Length: 208
Image (tube, rainbow, N blue to C red; front, side):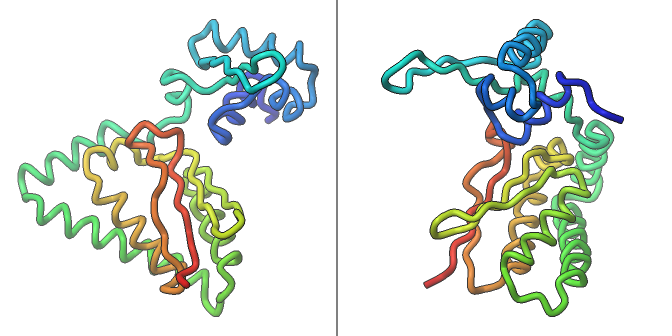
């Protein structure tokens, strides 16, 4: 089913972090006036924020991004019950039991991904597999090649509440990425949703 323009704008802002009316119009193949009309409607619902910035000569530019209410349109999977279960595990069984649970999950995820990467050596093919699988799991993942490194970007976190309650989930995912990409590369998280960034971004550099 085709999404309405408002939903498409929200999705575009979720994927890009921020965008101008002109880039939104291009993405939706509509006029700038049409884009501004939809943006005004979304703003009136409290779903987006705007910021005007001067960029040298000429008129200032306005950029739009999701508000907290807009971000909430992309739900955290079973957030409340997940957090309650994690709290119960810590209270009843202790921190060690929670660490064991996370380690078991990390191992199972790693095995699933490595099966898909049999005989794959190219980092770009590995990133293709990782982003495809992560997107299927709800992370809205993509990767980009920069001049001297790669970026692995997750525009959404479907387990954000669980990760906020127990950041061991985030550490285990970073460990898995490092093992999947291999020792020839160093991976570091440079944007973090839990620290109020719009996405989680990992920088991947070849070790010289």
